[in-house]
Amino acid sequence: MARIYLSAPDLAGTELAMVTDAIQSNWIAPLGPHVDAFEAEMCARLDVPYACALSSGTAALHLALLALGVGAGDHVWVSTLTFAATANAIAYVGAIPVFVDSDRASWNMDPQLFVTALEEAARTDTLPRAVIAVDLYGQCADLAPIADACHRHGVALIEDAAEALGATYRGRPAGSFGDLAILSFNGNKIITTSGGGMLVGRDKAHIERARYLATQARDPARHYEHSVIGYNYRLSNLLAAVGRAQLADLSRRVDARRTTNAYYREHLALPGWEFMPEASFGRTTAWLTCATIDPQRFGAGRDAVIDALAAADIEARPVWKPMHLQPVFRAHRSIGGAVAEDLFVRGICLPSGSSLTAADRARVVEVVRSVAPGSAR
Image (cartoon, rainbow, N blue to C red; front, side, top):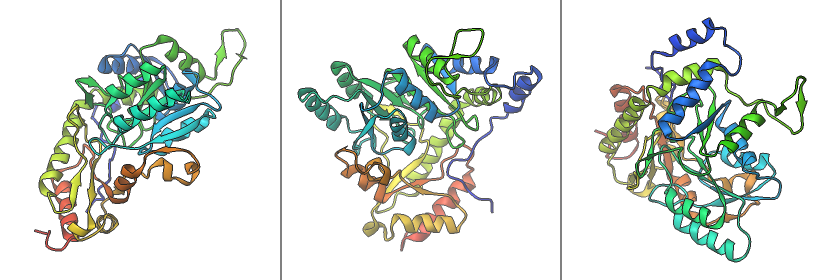
């Protein structure tokens, strides 16, 4: 049987025609008409006016911080339950991360905890320079109270929507909140350009600053003139062509992942299993279907389930290890942390790709149910 991956790339069927167009036009270097069109189509999808296509979501995070003027010694508050790239970008600019715990309603940054801590920081004159709120596993954070508090205190907000393209929050698309937002098109994301990302926002100056920095910060001159350090972060025209084909197929991909999520919820309604909630304020893409396992009630722990799936050539993973537990960041402050720690210790991510077949889903369920005594059928 073929290996079942956690989130394999899924071809829309139109990528080859788009890439062929790019090759035939001789636009194979970075930038070109497909990059321009990809940015415009993403802006239309998210209802934001400006975008800059980049080589990765990490590059977008890095440039977002630079465009907002975040630098050495500044504090940046960030969701602790996230992939390392979110926190790494803070280190790139010499800033200091402060990690904020999750809530159980969405697994994202706890808005009450955040607002309370920000009010205290305002009273003690220790406000952060910026906040990065992560939309985890295809679901938006509860962004309104976070954004309101940031606005009230003059703190910049970045929405890390790397995992949530296609999701909505109060009817608005993920990636349309904050001073800036970032997207990722890595190979495991809901759409992929093989590798790539995008920075989007409503302030033209922010995006133009990022675009300048992303193209080696070349100043206007006949020769190559540089007054600041720049980066080679722009997306290639070939990869943008792939992204355009994938973006046009986004709705189908969201529906497919939500179908898989619903199937798992129906067939793994087992004692000790608790799926990541779909928060009432939005619609998740279910980029990854995640759950926590109570080993006492289920009869086996998270790692035993992952091992059984691996033995059947099925990929599964633990939930992200919180950043405040990572060796490289352990010296940094954490605001709370117990919820994220519990989600990590008991959390599992199941295969969720939009190309999964009914047989694939059934195979995953069969293996999971075989692990716990009395749950197989």
